[in-house]
Image (cartoon, rainbow, N blue to C red):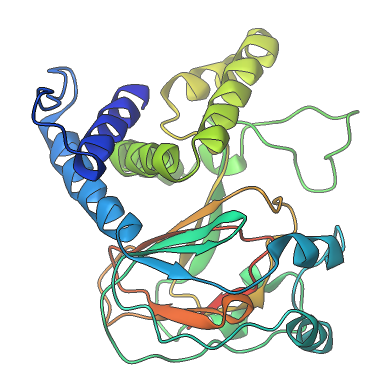
Length: 302
């Protein structure tokens, strides 16, 4: 993970600030060829995004102060009031890789392709991830969470310790989670490396948290230790949502200063990632990656 991140950071800086006197970065032989090719394509998209900024006229600091600690973003009247207090000028739909900026820094990063926009529905429920009405009418649908060490539901106080998610436990009769992790080693490494470019401080903090968890709890939990050794992401949890329409919401467990990474994977015509807070939306087809402050930015997918 770190090797890929270092490689992508070096290539990114070379592309943004080329210097003929400096030799081009060459990937280390230990990085698989497939990973190198994906890293090159991903870095190229990020360079394009940084060279194509979208300026957002919003006071994110004042907006952050107006949000409550447990703001799910599912109460329409409350969101309408926030839009009234913190209005933004409507912007054209984002149709190519772009970095959303305002005077306090980056609000997000998108990698998109053009299409016809749609809009997600509103929702009055906080637990929208497993609401049946939001899934498409197909045989394959659901929401699964994968983590080598997170707090179980209702047990997030200091009195409890993180545990391996059920989907990755060795004694689980369904070992599909382990197979998923094996298949996602390179993609998750790519996303983490991209985060190092988008938000280096968050990348470092995530990496340090995994190391600390491994050192402090690994000796008492061999199963967690084994998973942390091969976990390819600086995020300690990954949610996989299949055939899902996401209502407008905020990621209340996140922080204003943090980025969430969302990747669209599969084979389908595409969808739209809508961001009312920023007064814009972007096309969200398979292969897209979006990094945003999910706590600050009210967002949804249709």
